[in-house]
Each structure stands twice: as structure tokens, then as C-alpha cells.
Image (cartoon, rainbow, N blue to C red; front, top):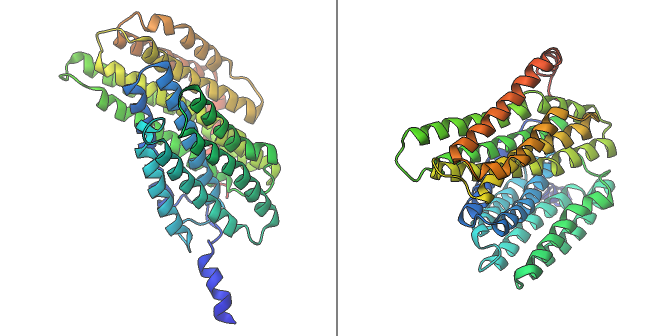
Length: 396
């Protein structure tokens, strides 16, 4: 009798008790680094509107699978029980998905879909085991399994199609994947606010790291004065994007999540502010990385329209996501970031007329000016927020 009861316990995942991000979670995130790199390279190899659209579809799909594991590891300890082995298997499948990115719409479309299905099945399987004693969580997992199954089936179907039909099936697959939790409700999910916010903050750093990698990967000539200036400006842009998120925004958002009522309210904030609105932030960073990669390859020549739109429009998308993020969390409009985003979009036509180095310099100047304005205009509030929140214990 005792051995019969112990066996399921050994096979079942262990529920999480600590809010600390584990080494295995950081290890898992490294696979997502390759996915981001592959999406940037996809656009670099095909710098057209179609290439950008396809890369963004791929990123959107992979983001959803990655964020699903953030929700999972807020419930299940990834380093205990069967979870560790399942996470390793999911990492291998995610790696295969990332390797298939260059041909995700062509020769590797079916392999991409099958490997993606393995990533999702591993995720749902662990959740199903963890929810056996929690009826509300079990219902949420069942609903997610339904919408995910439809999304996976559409993705498999898209592997046998091409052109507009293939793109439409991809869009439908994403709609079903993202729409399941939105329409079926979020009450049953469980998160640890501090852990949850930290994981998403870390992935922003990962994306910014990809923009730094793009600087090095974009150098296709002798390192001269132009390349050095472009590298310095590119680093300044990455630093500015980091500042805009981590200086105050991340701190306030984490506190808002921790103070929300556990259940529907807290999970809704987690879903909207992190699972949904962090996607355009990361997409904006990836687009900026493409623009910087192309800039380093031609510092003394104008960028073409798509790379110029990626450089300036990506930064605008990042800022617009911040505007929506603040509106969702504190219900106020960040007018200065909205104005800067609109200005960056308006400058795209000019961005393809001037040398790439000038366009990058203009972006750097605007972001630094925005940071300087906020630091001076809201100095007292910024100091108060940072002093209070940085010394608060992390919420569990």
C-alpha cells in the first residue's frame, strides 16, 4: 500500500514554494536566445515587408510557448520530481523549433510544427499532473489544451500550404493559442508575483543582449572610425531601452502585480501586462536589432526602407508598449513616451534618406533626450519610487 502511494508522488511534479528564479529556468531561457537570434537573422536575410511579417509571426508563436513555461514554473518547481526531465525535453524540442526558423514557412514547416507541438504537449502534461488536486486549475488547463490543440492543428495544416493561405493559417493558429486563456478566463491559474515579474524582466535583458550581438554580427568591414561610432551609438540605444524599462517601470509594475488580489485580478494583470504587452516590447527590441545590424554593415550609406522602419519603428513599438503597459497598470497616459514614439514613426521616411550612422545617431539622441526629460521632470517621484520599491522584500 505504501509503495503504491509513493510512486505517483515521485512521478508527479513538486509544487513551487520559493519565488527565486532557479538556474534551470535561466538555462531554459538560453534556448529562447537562439530563437530571438534566428528571428533577427531571418529578417536580415529577407529585409522585405513579407520577411518582417513572417519573422514577427514566428516570434509571436515562440513567445507564447516561452511565456507558458513562465506560468508553469510559477506553479511547479522545475528542478524537482519529473519536472526537470520534462523541462530538458522541452528545451530540446524548443531548440529544434529555433533551428527550423529559417525555413519555418518552407522546407522545415512540418518539422517546425511538430517540434512546436512537443514543446506545448510537455507544458500541458506537466500542468495536468500538477493540477490533479486543484479543480479550478485543472479546468483552466483543460481549456488551454483545447485552444492549443486547435492552434497546433492549424500550424500543421499551414505546413502543407503556401502563400496567403499559409499566412492566414498561421494567424488563426496564433489567435486560438492566445485567445484561449483570454476567453475562457484566468481565475484558475496560480503565480508568484515576484518570480513572474522577474522572469519577464530577465527576458527583456535577453532581448537587449540580442541587440548587442547584432552590433557585432553586423560588422562586415574593417573596424574603422565609422564602425566604432556606430557600435558606441548602438550600445547607447540598448542602454537607453534598458533604462526606460528597469529604472522605474519594472519596479512599479511588479508592485502593482504583488498588491493585486490573488486570483482573477492578479492573473488578469499578469496576462495583459506581461504575457501580452511584453511581446511588443521584445518585438520592438528585435526590430531595433535588425536596424542596428544593417547599420553596422553600411554606416556611410542610407538604410533601405525596411531596415530604417525597423530601427526607428522598432523603438516606437517599444515605447508604445510602455504606454499601454502603464495605462493597464496605473491607468495613466505616459504622454512623453507617446509623443516620442509618434515622432520616431514620422521620421522613418527621413531615416532612409540620410546615412545609416546619422539615423542611428538621431535615434540615440531622441532616446537620451526622453530619459533626461523624465529624470528632471519627475525627479522627486522617481527618487521616492526607487527608494521605496528597491528596498521592499520581494513578493512571493
